[in-house]
Image (cartoon, rainbow, N blue to C red; front, side):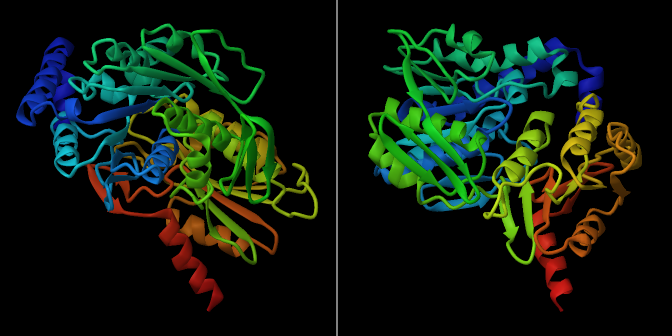
Length: 438
């Protein structure tokens, strides 16, 4: 039904429809964002992790916090999974959530803000206190029309800060991203820039820089203004995610020591480079579904020298990689690219179903396979995702590393005719691993 509406109704009428719902939600729930501090996090990758890290810091500092991410909804101690199959809820749902957070006494709400959510006015009539840009790489290009339009959609969150009725409005930008200047140009009362590389600031930009960083087999270490952070999260990208959360905290008057205490307690982010099996081989589940995120995930497992006695080189890294590609007519351009990246980093590849929607899953797999050029690489095509996971577990030997990407902890697999199949890569791994042990 939704697809038919989009097909036959002119875009300007759809815009009015979305806008009308946005103002209706705000009126119905009495503009709740005016009574709570709201942090909006946008970008291609890292949004969910930044939301989670930020919420943990704010809670550690003594605040009552609500949050929305692609993983879950949370209000203080009550949390429930996000089963909407959309990161950012619809206009009425998000206003209702904010009203509930206000009524329960929350001082902060931290929410993921997506480009598609922005184009549908889900961010409208939410007065943001802080907006954050994590990074930008091609995604949703077919729905937006071009990368430039995708970037502009993200920028509308920063543009909305100028219309916010809050007394102090803060923008926070990842300076390591080549698009940082675009997001820094929007008006705000305070601007923060964070990064790992040789970043530079000015009198109008407060710098939050990671120094002396180390990527370890079981975590990351870095320092910010002589405060050393020793975190259990894997990968260089999680230094960036941590810096974003630290920048948010600093903008709210929370000191680095409180940030350190909160972040060092976090063991993992669900479905984000989450280690499911430790012995005799390792199994990781990660949400990576863009070329940049996939490459970062593979590099992390290699660079983190999982055998602590020596760093793993590409030649002796035993990565068994399970991947597919989301269907539904979305971002077909990236499928071959995902195959190319797997070809570069993986010892064995198992191509499987992911979220085909109404597309032919076999055709999707063929398009991913087209990027795999190495004739010596062992490639399997197994449409049944459970069977693919089962095969990887049977293939793995002591010291091997399996990485399953694309879905993370998503609770559904979306197939034809708008049907959803209950799913969780992590649960399937555990179930199949138990069968092997028997």
